[in-house]
Image (cartoon, rainbow, N blue to C red; front, side):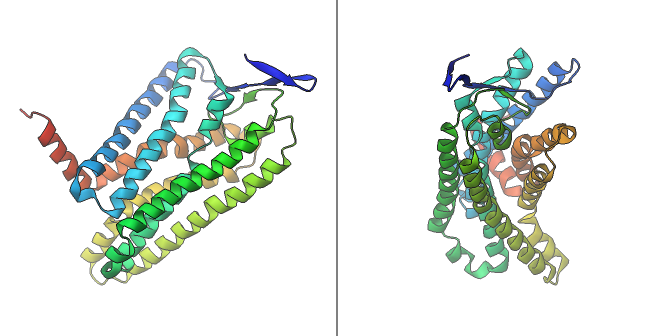
Length: 311
């Protein structure tokens, strides 16, 4: 292990992620399960990105944001699951400091993208006659770019502050990923500044997008309930039901994880719920949209018929 001096102590540059302990010989089974999840997640999200780019009928604001979300999920999954799979297969649980930093990216971006998608559905249902004007290409690009820049700047600032910290041991993180709180607890430096910065950025990056998402769906549901015909209500709800499911899974599990007390008895439960928003949400995203969306199915059918030789 690479080391450098930290006062009179040795500063660590690697961490041990404890993953899921007490598997009692189930490592291979868990490895195969997460391998299937990883393959399906990557294939599904990459397929959505390809379809959104290739099919002209999907060049709309809703699918533009969906393509951005799938691209983000692809990157996010690639920073977590490959290391977990390697750990389950080889038993090597170490992760470098830089690798740990990379895993801290993406969360703020996802919150903003989900909020932008909620706002898009709000305009489509509440203001259908003005939708094309209010959600034009320029606005879509600004919202998507703002989401990516917000996540990048926030995590870059936090990462710069974290890089100034010294970690003198122990180096064990009782989690399967480099979550911010357990990493900070291992530092032997003064962490008051980074804790304050993180509190401010967490408030700014998660609460406004969550409130915007919540307000959008309150307005959407109230509008749908006012539609007189049952067919009209079903059609309106179908345009946002897939996104609502993804939002519910993501925010529901995130709220549970960060509201659970940080105790030894609940730490394993915290890991289980963390799997939902870090592993299962990226998996659910392409499955929900592809299984419930006729336009995605039609675009996939066109691609298959165009590029594959059918018997």
